[in-house]
Image (cartoon, rainbow, N blue to C red; front, side):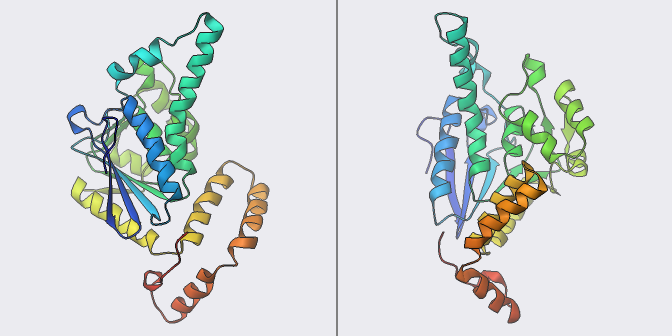
Length: 279
């Protein structure tokens, strides 16, 4: 399945219950044009409702993950919003920004865990994208850049909100966002932006799919409940998170998956040997 608008976000199913989304515009270094922003929302809205999908892998075609926003394609809408006066122009501009924010918020809202695999450059909007994902992997040649201040704007589709939640050092976040300097793979690993670094793209994709297989082999009730509650707890107090968790599990514990998983554990079997109902 490929995108219908021209960005060509390709959707593959490399293994049972695993969906692989590839940014597929390598001739433009996977730069994000108008079609991309629409297609990602459609894609993840469908995935969120698809009972055959339990985990998602996101990668970029070619040697580069993404060069970020396609300025030439986006300029007319972003730099020349319509409106008869400043109030109406601003109202329309806010609507446009909110629409683009939704492209990455939909990844975070999707209950299926999202593993993103980054090779080469991950610039601007690429950082917005990966910070909305759950697990970040990269190659040794990967580098990350919060590029927005270099083109005269504050990042507005997620990086400034999510990166401080991902990296422990507020000072480092501020430095990256204010100077637009490049961060390379070793520093990305050291700071916690990524959890694993691979020697090359082939090894990274193999590792990402192996990890996705491990996740897909567990109870979807357990996995999706874990993602939802991790994100809820990130944005709320410990007490609020515990209360939400108790309310969540008062129904979710009443699943056959618990008994199936416990029985497999007692028999020293992997959860991947269990057949779980679709969710």
